[in-house]
Length: 242
Image (cartoon, rainbow, N blue to C red):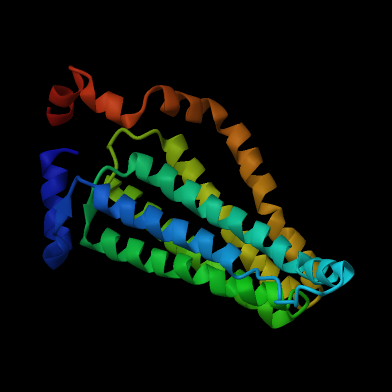
């Protein structure tokens, strides 16, 4: 980023001018919240206590009754994985932080930490419209919070390289926009059919796969030319400051 643009952004932020390049603590904290949220999903699934003399079919019946919760667990774990992958991809290109981004990330993680509550509710009441609306609404808010960080960081190239590939910006933006549209659509759809709404949410992963195939040439280039190696190249630093 040029010195003139950096100075302009510092002046624009005013009291929010705190800025740094070391993202280690931000990413470690984020990964920790994701890991805890994913772990709590499994802890919500418990087989009822039975006496040792209970008949095997009684225990098997109790396990079968847990199938809806297990399915919701799988669906939610995949959703958390999608959120984590999107966060990981975004911060592959975000190369710094400022105060607004820190607060945006904190708000996003607050929503991620609450996802197990929505998952537990849907697991208990998979046919209840209120549970589906709660689940879809929370994931919609979480997705939008994640998109906000990316849009803020790429707007005016605040926290990304000036020469970032526009296709990468478009890809990561679409990866956030499509799930948001799906969750938003699932809310009114759940009033007609909770099952269709849940199937629609599952379709997020197929859309993500299609987007990955469309943008695979760009992603392959990024993998073979990661930002860290680019910074270490001898000729890069003088050209960026010129």
